Length: 327
Image (tube, rainbow, N blue to C red):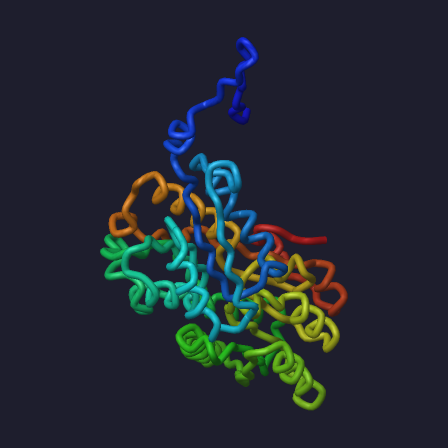
């Protein structure tokens, strides 16, 4: 229930709370939310973040404010957006993805930063170690690249005749792209699959990549982990359906958008954990002492309806191990 201010009328005179007493009320803390994508493509993740924040007792516009900064998939804007947040009265900066986390880190060494990344945060230079980050950053590591080999194996199990696989990556996301290409090519050699790498940094380049399918006719598609690709998941799923190419993705949100299958950790759960860490920092915890949390649960999600449309029979072994089968 909200606190109400009462004005008592006594003898025709109005007696109100003294101005000084009102001024002593604690200021509402402000969270800065810095994201490479747009508000339209991150609603599920932001909702999960707010759920985690609520678990620690913080509700937006009730006892905490959030300043959102969206780069709209233009990573070159992140530096200016991060600097703008630092100039505000920000208590914590939330930075999903390596580009946002690195931009926030470059902008401040004092304001706590909570990130979520699929890559090794030590290798990215975000923290000194997972157990003791040591600076003003901590967060969640959801293993976006370490499971690429397993993802390719699951795709081959679903499409055993696949001999030529297109790997779609985002070249501007250098660290994750290099790891993804290396890991997929290593896994492909082990199972005798040929890999063709295609690049896309924009929506038009995604269209152009799929346009090559008319002449190349790949047997399957492996979509690399990328915040930009996640934001364009409907476009990717629709093109894969149009060209009737079985595709694997890094997160269940693609499958919910019509994609065939995904394997990896839950991004929704990662964002919830970011919310709880943000709440703990608002309560006084130091990011230097909060260990980077690593995902421990991996989920296979299959869209059975898409599989049937592609003429695929999902093996019972995959159906049995799937976290969810969308009918």
